Image (cartoon, each protein chain N blue to C red):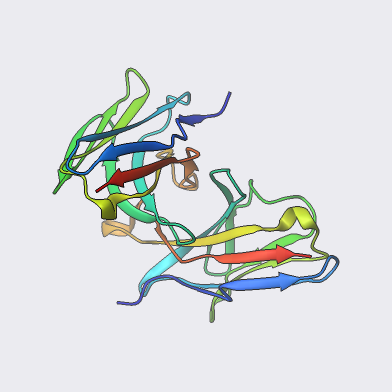
Length: 118
Length: 113
């Protein structure tokens, strides 16, 4: 059973360009979370999505950042007009629906995308 | 004050020793508690997952939660060099729509052969 997949693993962008990060959840998982890890800091929640729905975006910066999880295809985190401060590791996690329709609180992480803004 | 506090270390112990890692938290509404292991430049790997107070054991790992003290611990017995990594505690609320994880900053652990 393949784990959470993220691509690209490394992404270099110049200031002002767009960065697009992709995440394919584990098979059978319908919940996706995005986290950001800045150097020497812990993981910070950004956004929680289900298919075609944003459930919680309380951790997303107000501007330039957006996320989607379409009915078909991977979840995408988009950063427009990147700045040096966006350089970080971005991790995606997925979680399954538990028994009887309850969510499982276990989240499984992908390998991350390391974004460098020059 | 951060919601979750974790001593960043670094922590170095000899092979075979018992390792104790801890986190404290301020939000009494947290119900689910997790420990992740993260090797350098890799994604976090879920090690232990507990609900509310109590102990949970899995092989060499034991997780403890004391909600009255807002304190959680991870114990590693018979530590191995392969246990060298950063250990992250994480926790979440119980309500639907609030499953986001709040992490500690991580403790960097080195097991000396």
